[in-house]
Each structure stands twice: as structure tokens, then as C-alpha cells.
Amino acid sequence: MELLDGKKVSNQIKEEIAVEVSKMKERGEKVPHLAAIIVGNDGASLTYVGSKVRSCEKVGFESTLVKMPSTTSELELLKKIEELNENDDIDGFIVQLPLPPQIDTQKVLLAVDPDKDVDGFHPMNFGKMALDMSTFIPATPFGILELLERYNVDTKGKHTVVIGRSHIVGRPMSILMGRKGWPGNSTVTLTHSHTKNINQITSQADIIISALGVPNFLKAEMVKDDVVVIDVGITRVTDDTKEKGYYITGDVDFENVSKKASFITPVPGGVGPMTIAMLLKNTLLARERHRGRK
Ligand SMILES: Nc1nc2c(c(=O)[nH]1)N[C@@H](CN(C=O)c1ccc(C(=O)N[C@@H](CCC(=O)O)C(=O)O)cc1)CN2
Image (tube, rainbow, N blue to C red; front, side, top):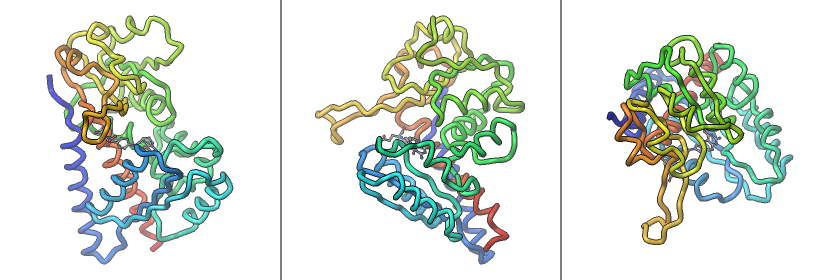
């Protein structure tokens, strides 16, 4: 079994990006600028945006964090998005999800200028991705592709089973794994809460990408030998004996599934850190596209 070490690879990617940023500085060019909007005080979301801002500092990007209270109205958020759309200094921005219930997430994602949509969530960018056109690929799926590529995992003609059909991970992942090229050229089955006999389906999978958010969902008896397992589920389980008051676990019974797997991602330290590295990569891409502008 080989560990797909997202922490290590994400650090390599950040070093590669830092080199690119140094070259930009040497040429006297503007460095990439990422902005992040967070609405409310959700602990996990605050951790993730904090990590995005620190990563920007690490690679030499400029960053702007916009914190809005949990009572923010949809209109107030849309106005802020319009400001960022019009601010030529900002290359890309994200709206941290999930949003409070009074805000319609789809309306918000539609309001982001597709040219600055470094999360790749706007329908225009999602459509381009599905049509194999150059675009911003959502950071988590992009990170999974990068891990498969850097560890030379064979995907051609393999049966990939994706568990979960979220717009952020499962749905785009099912499209990307079936695309022409590598990593891709897979035969994909997208499973969800209404799927029957899921054990039978996962047992036939060469590659399993689980993005369900149910701790220990994928058990050893549900997978075949030499399976490749990508665990995208990140759940915080309250535990007062831990320093932070919680521990993090994935969808996969790692201890037992890892004994059968050829490759497997850990949680923490697998797909999560890759998400942030690939967001930086998309922001670098946005800057390169905006080069003529400033
Ligand atoms: N606008 C967006 N919102 C959300 C996205 C996204 O890509 N764009 N994805 C997730 C959250 N997310 C990034 O925003 C994210 C999740 C997890 C990690 C990570 O590094 N996890 C660590 C564990 C850290 C912890 O929870 O304490 C790990 O797996 O090792 C990074 C980013 C939903 N929202």
C-alpha cells in the first residue's frame, strides 16, 4: 500500500508556485491577489479561510479576507461580490461555503465574475469543464487529479466509483474521471443516497472516491484487493480528550481498508491540503490570464 500524501504534495505545489511568483517579481510584474469572503462564524470555515490566507502569504500572493456577520442579507453579499468583480487589483476570489440559510447559494455563485471564479463553481466554468475547455477546475477535484498524476496512478479503462453527488466534489469528479486523457479515461459510476446495493458496486471498483461525510462508511468488506481509495469526507468528531476538543475522520475505515488498497489518502493530510494548493494554482492561472490588463 502506498499513501497518497496530500500534505507533502501540496507543499511541493506551493513551493513551485512560490518560484513562479519570484519570477513575476523579478520581471516587475504584479503578483496574484486572492480574496475570500466568509459569512458567519462557523469554526471549520474560519479554519479553512485562515489557511487560505496563510498559504497566500507563504507563496508570495496578496490576499484580502472579507469577514461578514452571520446576519448578512443576500443583497449585502451580492453587493460585496459586485465590488470584488469590479476591483481590477483582485485576480480571483471565493465565497466560502456553506452560507447561512437566508442566502441563496446558487444566486451567489452566479454573481461571481466567471473570469475571477477561482473556485470553478460558476455554471459557465462548470460547463467549460464538462466540455473539456480550458477553465478553473474546482479545487478539490483538481487536487485529486493532481495526486493521481503525481503518484502515477493508472486510471485508463478502470472502473471509478464516486460516492456522493455534491456540486463541489462528487459531480465534477464523475465528469473529470470520464474525460479523455489522463487522469481520466475511466468508466464512472456516480452513486448517491438513493443508490441500491452500494456494496456490490464498490466491490467492483478499481478506484473509489468517497465524498459523503459519513465517518467509517467505506469498510474493508466493500472493496476489492488493490483498490485505489480517495477519501474526501472530512468530519469533525467532538472529543473532549483532544487538545482542540475534536478529532478529524474521513469516510473510510482507514485501518482495515488500507490493508487491501494499492493507494489510499489519509484523513487528515490527504485531499484537504490539496484543495488549498489547487486554489492557489487557479489564482496563479487567473493572474496569468489577466496579465494584459495590468
Ligand atoms: N468556496 C469554497 N467552499 C468550500 C470548499 C471550497 O473548495 N470552496 N471546500 C470545502 C472546505 N475547504 C476549502 O474551502 C477545505 C476543507 C478541508 C481542508 C483541509 O485542509 N482539511 C484538513 C483538516 C483540517 C481541519 O478540518 O481542521 C485535512 O484534511 O487534512 C482544506 C480546505 C467546503 N467549502
